[in-house]
Image (cartoon, rainbow, N blue to C red):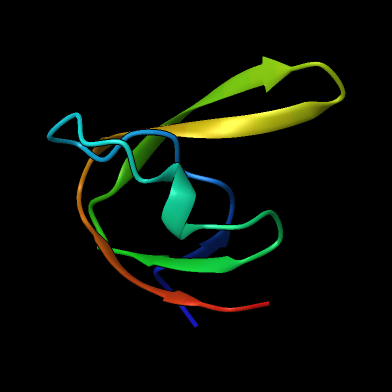
Length: 60
């Protein structure tokens, strides 16, 4: 299904902090135009959403 990626968003495009809504391994549905920058932290890589919208979260 397009528009779905597995990642932990740290910030929405408006700068709001959304991490508490998303747990590791959750599937996040983003808008088709969403863009993200990978940010390595320790042994994991997080994604900073720079464009687009988080449309919903499917719990793991």
